[in-house]
Amino acid sequence: MQTAKVKAKDMASEAKEKAKEATAKMQGKTGEATAATHGEKEMAKEAARAKKDQASADKHQEKAEHRVDAAATTGRHGAGAGAAVDRAYPSAGTTYPASGKYI
Image 1 (cartoon, rainbow, N blue to C red):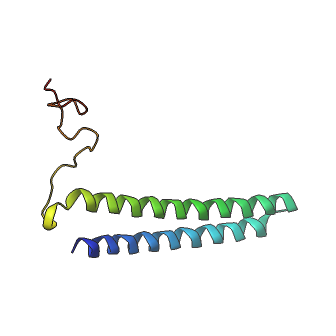
Image 2: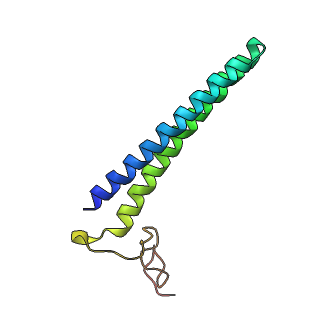
């Protein structure tokens, strides 16, 4: 069931990315149409490319967050694990991680 939720969230992220890309494309075309010089047209193209790249980066970041959320909420056999455990300090502050000695 958890993977279905992740897939649904990923699909929503994909849709948001497509909308942002379309907006960036239209803004780029508008910028090119209103540009007076060749330099301004190139700047409009670069701005549109940058916005598209940012939309793609945002999508990948959201997808990574979906995976982290799914991993944090899924324990053994699908049961909720509660708070995420820091692997570097699994004892949650009662012992030193390397030595195993109590504080």
